[in-house]
Length: 155
Ligand code: CUA
Image (cartoon, rainbow, N blue to C red; front, side):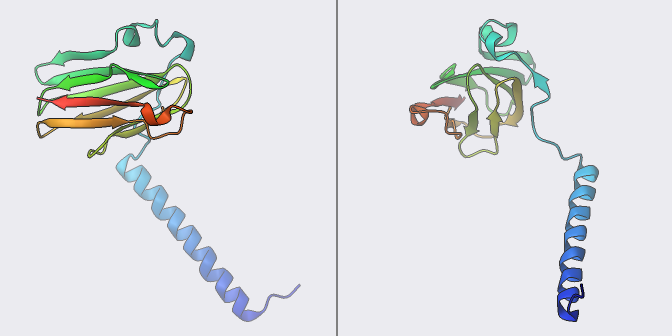
């Protein structure tokens, strides 16, 4: 089978671009240590509510300016539904679900993770300004998905 000359040229250009883009992706991923922000810790979904971390979800101070917030995504709500953290503190969120896939987005920030059954999603953020933020589930999780929200107050 012979391939016309122009088609060979376009195939070469397309193939070269594909290889170049994959190489750029690989090099930048390795050079910057790019990785998903979470999903390294596993948890049995059936034990989320009885396990140590999520049995009493909420804010805990772990250092002079460091806090952890455990959030349980329980269709169709987050527990706790109201979170308060101090301004300027390093806040690490750990989120787990006992049912289906949810999202955890703090509107107006770059905090936006999927919450997948079986995994703990971790994300760290520092809030530079006081204010009230809306936390949304942005993965469709059922008929009541639109009700799934919480508030975060930075004081
Ligand atoms: Cu949870 Cu949508």
